[in-house]
Amino acid sequence: MTLFYSTSTWSSQPQISEKTKNLWEQASQKANWRIVQLPNGYYQTEFKQDEDWTDVTRRETIEGAEQAIDASVEHYSKKLEFVNGPKIVKTFE
Image (cartoon, rainbow, N blue to C red; front, side, top):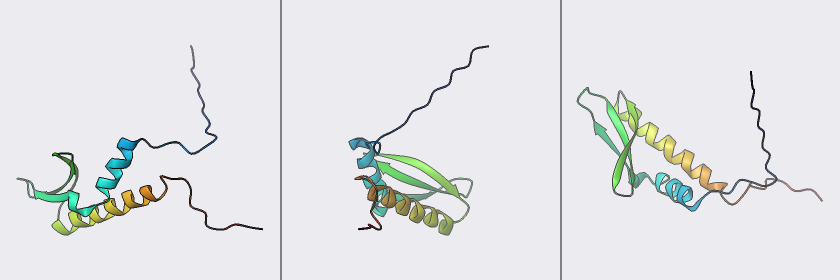
């Protein structure tokens, strides 16, 4: 039996591609989201990527769908905060 084991280390923060950064910027704007009602009565949240709408989540209520969008917008906004590296919260002299 052959086992393959691999490890990797980073000496600096991984670099985010420009495509990923643009996606996060679009996802952090609520204007790029919508809610559609499906034939089974559920509500689907969709995100506009370029000219296409991509389905993201399904919820039983419209309120639940809107909460999911709000949480996604907040999530991607937080990701954008750290694109340029970690945030310094305290320094010592």
